[in-house]
Amino acid sequence: MTAGLASPRARVIKRTVGRPRGSNTDARREMIITAAIRVFAYRGYDAATVQEVADLVGITRPAIHHYFPGKAPLYRGALDRAYDIAMTPAGIGSERFTDPELNGLRMACALLGTSLAHSHRIADVAPRITGVSADLRRMCAQAVGRHDGAAQVDALVTTIVGRWVLTACDLTWIDLEVDVDVL
Image (cartoon, rainbow, N blue to C red; front, side, top):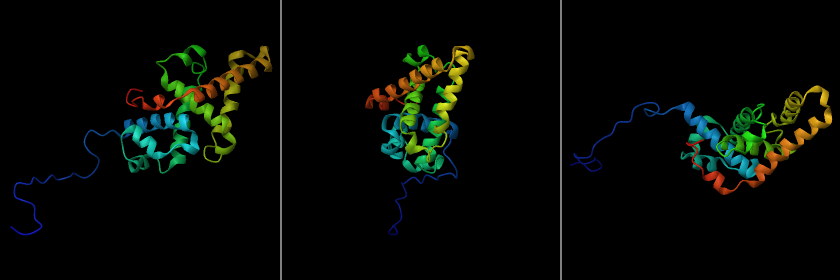
């Protein structure tokens, strides 16, 4: 037997070119965004790491970089998804917000609250955050009606943003530990 060669009993597994069978790029991207919403809502942009998102999903950090080239694009993806979840007429209703089965909505609202609280620092990273308050104000004006005045619109906006910020403040490490496949 020649030195350096494997024994004849060793089975050689040939790896095929491309992604493994059964992998789903869209599903993986969704899992990453869901995990990113949780991590950024809990930690904030500055303290969150891509590694923490990868750990939550159960993949490597380079695998995250396959979908998002860095922390800022990952944050923008999470913020966009949080916006899509929370910035609906149903998303701002108090009944839906407090329903424990709507944990995705709760986390989306927490991320928006955290982001709005730090919008002066993260506007360069995620310019969309600067438009969230204007969009929310417009939605609240439609919900309240034009005849009720700016004071009611302001009160509703304040209530919603306050709820988002308080939700972010109430998050614990347990909120991070929920399996992202369940969401």
